[in-house]
Image (cartoon, rainbow, N blue to C red; front, side, top):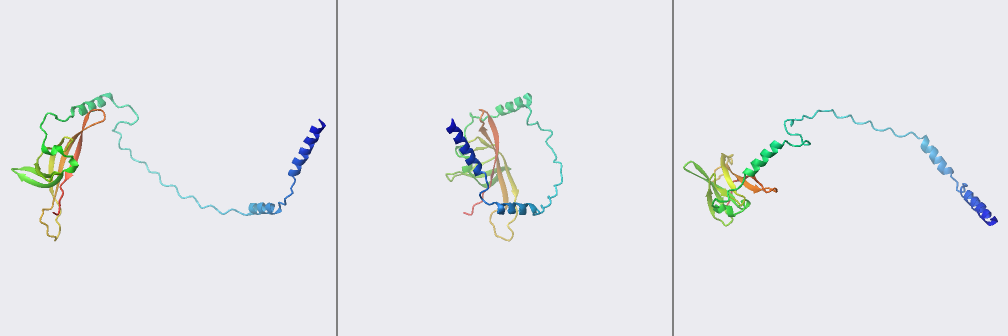
Amino acid sequence: MKILTSLLALSLVAGLSGCSPSVPTDDLQRFVEKAQSRQPDPLDPLPPLPEYRVAPYSVTSLREPFTNPDVEILQKQQDEESAIKPDLNREKQPLESFELDALSFVGLMKKENTQYAVIKAPDGQLHLVAKGDYMGKNYGRIVAITVEDGESQGNQLDTRPPLKAQLELEEIIPTSDNHWRVRPRVISMQFSDN
């Protein structure tokens, strides 16, 4: 027990001797006093607050996004979607064997007040199509061929007329829930220099 008491006293003396200032701290003390006596640099003033403007909310007539939609409206939308489907019994037209992106609208022709579009297929053949014809693999039906005068080319000699023409189609594509929906597509006439 005497040994334990003497070890405890010795460790207490060693611990207290470590707390004595054996390293001079005068320079640290002077630095702290100098730092505390110095005045801080003034802060930059805050920028002015922007003017508050009320944003107009113009969609009050639409359904709120966080409420359940009306069951009747949903049923009507589903009925409209289920009424859309391609006519699988009609005979396919030649341009329906190509992807729509592979076909080029290259010219126009008018015969007996009917506007025709000249379509170039990937195999190089030219086809005449009119409103109501089909093209592309997604049951694309031509709904309009629009032609409008373009701007002249100035003093440049140009053998082609300054026209802008578009072919408007409605494709019928499948949806993820086994229904069909209409997707409008537009093909613009392409001029080539060859």
